Amino acid sequence: MKPPLVPCRLLAFALALGAVLMRTAMPDAPAPESGLNPLAGFSAGLASPVRIEVALGRGEAGRPDVLRVTAILEDGWHLYSIDQKPGGPKPTRIVVAEDSPQRPSGPFVPDAAPHARTVTDVPSWNGLVVEEHADRVTWQAPLAPNPSGHGGAIHGTVSVQLCRENACTPPETIPFSVAAAPTVQSAGRDVPGNRVPP
Image (cartoon, rainbow, N blue to C red; front, side, top):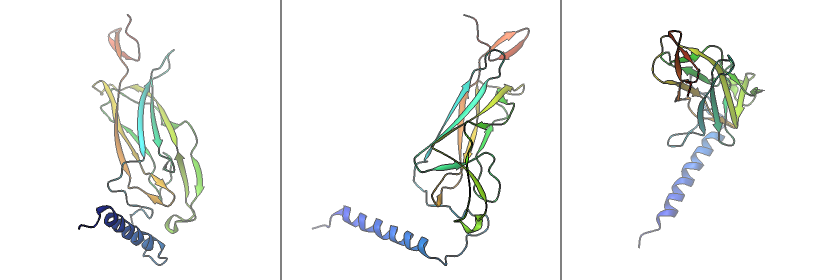
């Protein structure tokens, strides 16, 4: 008679978990090598705890179009501000491709200020002020026509480092694409954002 498979897998999982917990509880563990994130955690095979949504806000009454980039995080997770200082976690970076038909004409600004705290529980970051966004954050930037751009989509990447408690995932870069503002011919030139008359 074969032993049940579930208890064997459960036992293997418990042993692996015990080894991880024992290793993290050891106070004299060697310091991480230079250049490595001291909070890096195991993330292989796990789905990302962040979802990125991108939308184009149409400018009206002479205002420019606006690109909105929203990060929606699972409970307990946070990412770092665009202005996060060096020496610790990686700041969020939003990059619009050089060949996009519209590009930011100003900086990306968050809809809410990040939560700032001073790190005291990670020796290599001790005293560092980290700026964290949790739950949901939307950054927006005004757009301008890109004379060297082409195609019908604004595209680029959002790079983030996600953390919770004392564990972080490796930084990840997420591509995005959103339809650019329609154009109409006006006085011999394309004018983005204008609506085509019915």
